Amino acid sequence: MPRILIVDDEPGIRRILGALLRTGGHEVVEAPGATRALAELAGGVFDLVITDQKMADGDGLGIITASRDADPDLPVVMLTAFATVELAVEAMRLGAFDVLTKPFLPEQVEGVVRRAAERTALLRENSLLRDELHRRTGDQGMVGDSPAMLALREMVARVGPTNATVLVTGETGTGKELVARALQASSPRAARPFVEVNCASFTESLLDSQLFGHERGAFTGADRTRHGLFEAANLGTLFLDEAGEMSLPLQAKLLRVLVDGVVVRVGSTTPRKVDVRILVATHRDLLERVPAGLFREDLYYRLAVVPIRVPPLRERRQDIPALARHLLAQVASDLKMPGKTLSPDALGKLSRYAFPGNVRELRNLVERATILTRSDEIGAEDLPDLAGEGDGAEAGADALQRWLASLGERPDLRETLVEVERRLVVRALAAASGVQAEAARRLGLSRSDLSYKLRRLGISVSPEELER
Image (cartoon, rainbow, N blue to C red; front, side):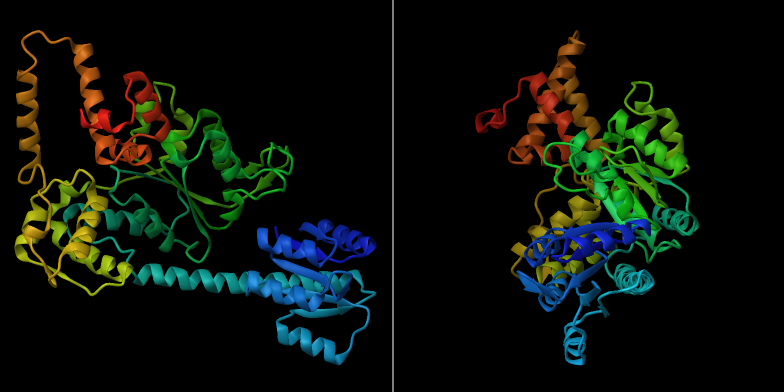
């Protein structure tokens, strides 16, 4: 639904235009002068501006300039009671879409609004196409020729062109967002918006507002109506990362979108139709959360129309050399540094490591080495000591057996599990320098889950505690 800003210091003109445009299904914001219009342009997104030429606190030419500064593709229609050739030429030079003379006919307004909306849609579609082309030819490819990656790419190629809802699963750091973007790029919606949100990053009420939008006055601080991400992704794709962290009430609202294709803003009872493809990612086993009452079974089967599992890096170690080189070039470009190479010994050292943090951990290692290594080639000595290098599974099993043997013949199971949990949480906090959001990511938890464990285990995030 196009959003239109009307700027005029005559209440009657605003009332007539507003009624005409709202009848046509447009969302209208009214500004009684140039000062208010500038504030609206600075804080909101519009599809069209209709402005009067002469106002007490400014003029239409200034509004045209401000609108172009806010969004170069934003069309502006100027209204004037004193049309002259000079004024029209100046308005067009500044970027006006059209000039209408007062008094105007409803058909004139409807016609210019329709043409402006078509032009805006075309410009934004072209912009999205350019962005998508950059994603396809840039650094967004899924690297690797292992059997696991070949199967993953084949699945994406088969599912991408459909409108099917996809559940992407995999450990933290495996590249689930990359798979979602690849699905979008190969779909008929490739030129349409790709909107993503991490469900673990918001409280329940804030996530509700983010996804579904809210009406003005719906809650304290809601000083204006806001479109939700479902509406922003209309005709495109909405990617819900870490969807397993959604509360049950939000799961019910998501289910309604999947079943009926409608959203209801917070503070409203009016359903709004949306046409959105939904892609979901999670590191959790959602089916295991169903019996515990943490995830709706009916929603799970709606989401898992096509499940896609992204393999961890330890299951495709033969891809590590190619992936490391790819990330090395990507890091050099991002940091605007000269490109470097990896020595055979460095590649061998990386290939022997299990990478519990997956591709994300590999990128961090490569980025650190790029910054700190003085020569043009990164050697094995430039990489940190990688715990568990070699056969990670065997090393981990041996360490576990030694620890179990130290517990004696009759350990208290409950106390032992609590101690294991406590040590893992403290270790993660230490590795994250006390940053709880990063520690939660390392443990595969949501921020709220980690906060609960800190309280239950009596852990305070202090230097003394982290050193224990």
